[in-house]
Image (cartoon, rainbow, N blue to C red; front, side, top):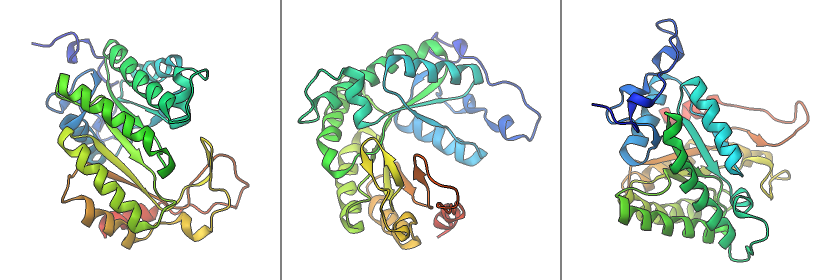
Length: 272
């Protein structure tokens, strides 16, 4: 039998022609799939289903409960999973700009409050939801640490973390340092089965106060050797990590012709 929080209340994806990409999006066939926030093995199974069936799950940065609701409503109307994420600056805005943030306390509070909000309302929309934290540079690690503390407390009470996944973006650091720090954090995350996203190579442009607009162009493209080091270092710790490799992509506005995207690099990295 199905409970309110499970498949019975969830709108099924719209029907599509057999063989079309959308027809393969029967994520409800994943054992245990449910409406609401998914974590651990279930979240990882959703990742794998998307990859195996050739579709993407778009992630949206949210800064208020209203923007969270907009993402949830849109995904529910399409009958697809939602992916809600919080940046460090967006997290501070979520709980109010009047709160001091000198030690990233507002960013921690806002991200945690946002995650709890999504957990409370997501089941009513009848779709699976992933909750994620976006780019975290080295100077923002206190924010990351605070979210992990919240994950740990939630795990003690509920047997799963508060968030589905977190991103560490240490791409401005030397590659070896980037990967080694990520490995230490993955060791903390693995017992809770939190998915780690790691960035290698630098995303150009400006986002959330991070300005990479003047970065050398060769830094905008990852290499097979970069991805291989990540795989060899992290896979013995946990399989639950993803790599945000750079293929010339940038944040924000840019002049036509200034950006040369090479998405075929992502395919070659996986084959390597």
